[in-house]
Length: 340
Image (cartoon, rainbow, N blue to C red; front, side):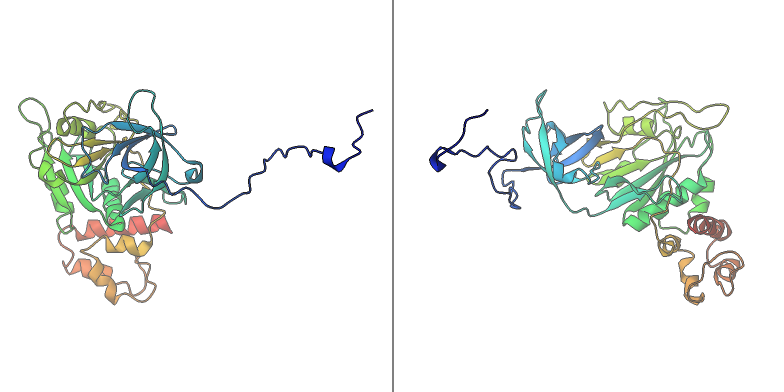
């Protein structure tokens, strides 16, 4: 039998397992937090370089390894995100800091796995230029991919640019004709005498900017990155002779500093670029040579082939959409059809 307490003075309540400190909603203000930018993400570890944005960040600054705070566990954090971190920000081996805040993004480049998948995947944050890399041959240009990346760029408020590789195998005439009436810069990056891609024409479009490079495997994107950023050592591969498709080489997304100033975000080769997250009106507005005709379409027009009152066919037939108008209209209708 246990001891019997006979006096109030002798009674001592058992301590609560939850402790005696009152709960509070007051969070720390992290006044000592250091601002930085995400340069890569790998299995719950975030590589961060100190600075307010990539354009002003120093390439010589240490890369800090971070985890994210518990209150951010449901927040997607991607390369280009501007964050605040606390803890050991020295970047020394074994050091670890913690991301405590993510700033509002100026631009967000998103994609879905296909046009029916409602799940958005953020590719990069705060980019101002999207460089879609395509080859003229080996592999052949993927017109659907190029159309989709341009639409996604316009929707995100990012300037689109086409970097055309392997012009020694075939000229870029077909690509230039297809996008002649679209507000997109086309830059040829053919090989020089040493077998390396020429970047002289591309660099002025990237200097002092935050750019993201996208492209199917095998188009020469990693080779282009290695020329733009000496020492980047991004893995390169070849094209499968049986399928005509490139082999995936780069497996992670990295932001890399340009010697001339600015940063480029290299992404793994993509197989698909879904637009399930984009409103159909945004898709139409990306086709600038066709958009004026929609003012004469009836309210709620689907712009599908044969849609009653759709003004697009007459607009293209008149030549107002330019020499590539027919192909562009087919492309628009294909994208719109996939979204419905």
